Length: 140
Image 1: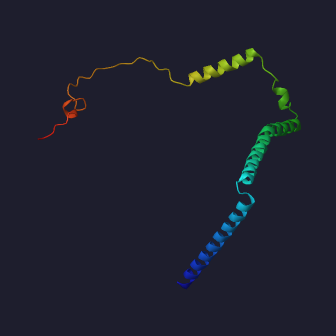
Image 2: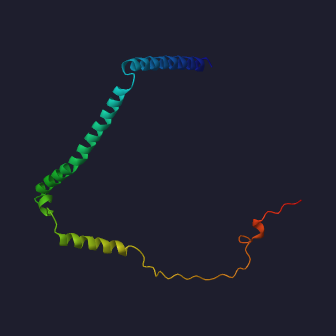
Image 3: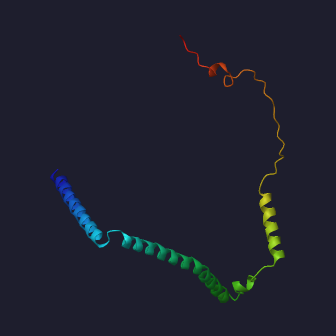
């Protein structure tokens, strides 16, 4: 019982000290940068620098992977990956590839007949379409 009381008292003391420290730091920061221009500049700089680093990483990762693949292929005595891939394909090759992809993807779906058959069901009475239930009858 006394141990939990001591723990709660120390937690409350730590909490009050940390709140006082946060408030003191907030007052100092308000004195230094009253309109928040500095923190805005710092935040935008951090975001744009991280975006630049990510851009450079993703831009150069393909070069690194290709270099690693070429080293492995040279060790095994095979042709390099750059020699296998032509620099630019002609328009006829691009059209053939696009046609092959289209034909492949169109075969993935079922061929349906697109014939719809509508059978009339003879139900003369349905409470959903009855007009009597739509009119309120007030008792006088």
